[in-house]
Image (tube, rainbow, N blue to C red; front, side, top):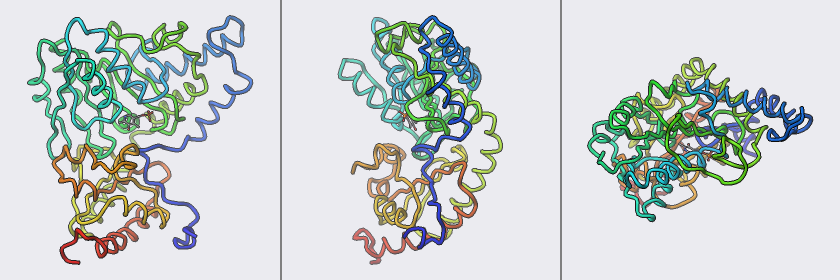
Length: 395
Ligand SMILES: *Cc1c(COP(=O)(O)O)cnc(C)c1O
């Protein structure tokens, strides 16, 4: 029925910050690892050695994409695990040195909730504020450092508003003070150039399903000599730090996906930026009482996030869904709850405007026609909802 309304067969998927489809080249690379090349990399015969070689090739692809050495890449079950490991692992290994962690108020819950857990264990955490565009001020990081600071964790780019953080400047401060620096780069891979050395990053989290790889696989980059605890006890896999038989198909998919994402980044950024800017410009022009969330220029090429006064983001989503548009209010994790987005409130939005925000995140399959379609339905959706809204003074 939705297709009939739209006269089109394919729904418009604009929620690529939540997840992406696996690219055909990635599926193709993974398939043999499920069937004929199923060896356990830890065993001793030819089939196992082949799996070992395959796994290490994938590790090399991930390393290459971020300017790391192969042996500094540790496969994990995704971005959440990588963030948990970085934060809890560094905290545990440095407990005698200090008990203070610096992060930002707009981190993903994988970081924020890891910090909350540490607070319950007696650690102290500084949650740095952000400006109205969602940027962390590097000088504020430096001011927050104390003799007890053992970790700084600031995300490379935000998943809700797309704001890109001054990572290299923060990395330089961390390095000057000899404090390990972790960055959640889950949204940044394939979107902005990442180089762990020039950015002064000691730990970095990434996740396959955010850049057209499979779900359930990610990686943590750990710079050599960084003090960090073991994440999973068991066998000697992942240099004895993250036990468990390796997810070889996942790792292969991750390696292929990150290689393609980085190789195609320049053309993707150009294409997506044009669509993003048209969406933002026309939404702000055609719909009154609307504002852009996040930074006007220091933002991910695929991210549009706008606040509509007087309406609920949830109701926009439901109506867009009936029209064949898949979008989000913020992160997938918060949209199921009734709490206003912690990211938008940290940017200074009052709760009712944070509730009235819509996130459209573009991706490889989106076309100019998709943008036309969203621009054709959105003003009517907003108008209809505003007519029904008890928040609307003109109703
Ligand atoms: C999606 C996401 C994560 C979590 O990654 P998973 O692989 O889904 O666990 C962490 N941080 C950011 C910024 C994300 O967008």
